[in-house]
Amino acid sequence: MSTPYADAALDYFNDGWFPLPVGGAKRKALLVSGWTGGQDNWPDRKQIERWVEEYPTANIALRLPKDIIGIDVDMYDGKPGAATIADAEEKLGKLPPTWISTSRSDGSGIRFYRVPPGLAWPESLTKSFGGGVEIIRWDHRYAIVAPSIHYTGLEYRWLKPSGETASGEIPGVGDI
Image 1 (tube, rainbow, N blue to C red):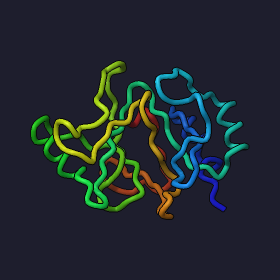
Image 2 (spheres, one colour):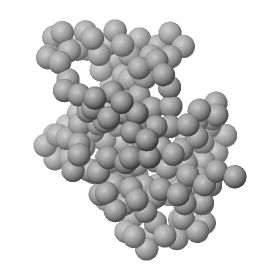
Image 3 (cartoon, rainbow, N blue to C red):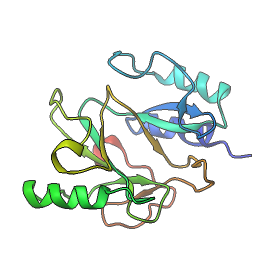
């Protein structure tokens, strides 16, 4: 039996992240309440240890720190994330290489960037550039990360800024 949350939640916490247990039919539904959205609750080590005991087989979702965003680019099933990002980069400048969380091999994934705390970011780039791209931030959404298992059976993994798969390596918040 796979135990993603038990295997890695404390490692994520030790690296500066806020890991939350997720599950359900698509393995992405939050299993605990009061820890996301505009609520300024942040789990401490004791809370995560309790969740490890209660939800060992859960997937791992990261509630992002206030100075990190995730740019979630979807390129699967005809979604236009690749074109949206290309158009945005042509108009605004190229994004720097960064860590990516993904379960796919088509370029889809969440790209993580450090930003000034308090900077407002739109929920999506759809209105300006097209579809298939959403912004994840501390008060909106969360990111599913390795070693979680996608509902299709694919395993999430980290890609380094070089594009290589990070075998068992978890980026620390300071690496973003």
